[in-house]
Length: 319
Ligand SMILES: Cc1cc2nc3c(=O)[nH]c(=O)nc-3n(C[C@H](O)[C@H](O)[C@H](O)COP(=O)(O)OP(=O)(O)OC[C@H]3O[C@@H](n4cnc5c(N)ncnc54)[C@H](O)[C@@H]3O)c2cc1C
Image 1 (cartoon, protein in one colour):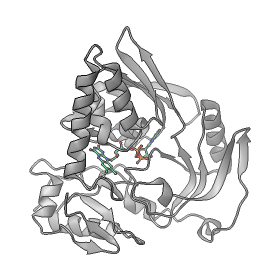
Image 2 (tube, rainbow, N blue to C red):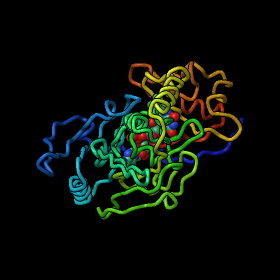
Image 3 (cartoon, rainbow, N blue to C red):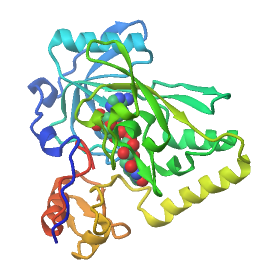
């Protein structure tokens, strides 16, 4: 059955082509390179441990900056070495190939911030903040708007890039602006309008830049207990409808207009289909699971794509 074509933010294929240096491939020990007192760039870091699908090769170079200054130094180092840069959040939307990622991978998980503006009902949240943590925090404050994000195992940065969404809501609904570092390493504010949001898509998917933080509008003054119940309801729904605790990168395909991608895959009898150590979930057919061993998840993805007529996965390194 042919369905509308999805846009692809970051493609599995592009990463497949990203074979990095022989040194990385042979796991030669290279000492860390200090770029600040408490920040070093490491060589050959396994990305399987840093992604929810638990597969993939190594980052040729890897750094976890804790401040804007450390970020700027990391970018300067990559520029001086002539290396490409890739950003990593919680790795819950990434499918990294066995070839790994060439250049410098910058993990944003230590970019933490939660700055509330009580007068406006706005919060500026660091890119590395985990979405479930943010959801519970806002519920406890009695600020409504993010109850639905509780079951998405990503960070604020990844959610802003992917326009993550669930239960008829998406990140763009509440977003006011983001602060980024542009390629020159300067701070820059982009408004929601400038980010050109649509279904699971943003300008940042084809014009990547590091998200430092994002400012959201919420609705203060709700009963925290009611918000906690709503948040818990969303989490419960996840656990009962998705293979939530098994290694995956969530739903692989964007939903076309006709039917959900899961429905289409299920109706091609692909539930439980296994290939290359990966399998189509019995519980939710749009989830491809890591069966536990070395996995080539691209094979069931390709099979679903060709049988159902779905276009490429949702994001690139991605689902
Ligand atoms: C069990 C499960 C359930 C899921 N359910 C949903 C769902 O309901 N709805 C949904 O939309 N998604 C869902 N996802 C997918 C995923 O959690 C979201 O897309 C999430 O927003 C990705 O965030 P992340 O931090 O993991 O990003 P990553 O996977 O690390 O990265 C995703 C993209 O964002 C970029 N990026 C990450 N951080 C930054 C940053 N600070 N600056 C610039 N670029 C950055 C990366 O380069 C990459 O292109 C699910 C995943 C799993 C495993």
